[in-house]
Image 1 (cartoon, protein in one colour):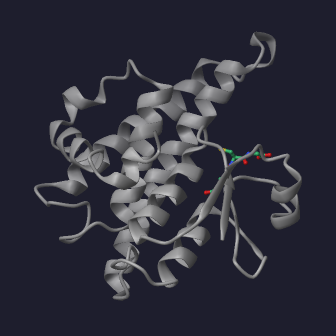
Image 2 (tube, rainbow, N blue to C red):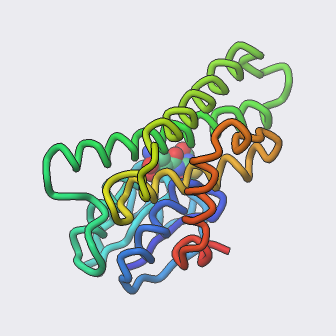
Length: 198
Ligand SMILES: N[C@@H](CCC(=O)N[C@@H](CS)C(=O)NCC(=O)O)C(=O)O
């Protein structure tokens, strides 16, 4: 199977982390959403797109992680138990939501001044980021992982969001307010799956 994406996309990074955590063999190609293979595999022309071994395309990151998890490999990233699965998925939604808000602000900042949506738009998305990171700190609590006692999609989503936040907003200084989350993130960054992102 082959993952198509760009290291600039947090949703792509999330899939890469999940694939390495599962210990599954995959090819990775750096491409833009406009690349012909992306369009052939994903009518929405977005990255990440996964080309399965049988040639079929899969999207979006949430479905790709679910698929990859079901292929086997290392321990499950998405628990089978209903309540556990919903909690891990909620963490995923939290991580994705933070990434969406950072993407929105980055896009706004790249837009020519005359066409920008304005400071209220930025403030609205910034408050999603701030509240989202605070929720991560709260929900992590004193646990060794975001959910349960081993790595799950909850940690993959948390790490993907914080990696992107650090890259796009290096001056945010979220660690000062959220030391427990900062410590957990530092531990996650030592994992080969995250080091492999480069
Ligand atoms: N919800 C999607 C988001 C994917 C997404 O928005 N990817 C962006 C790159 S970060 C993209 O391909 N944008 C191109 C476009 O929208 O035309 C996921 O989780 O995979």
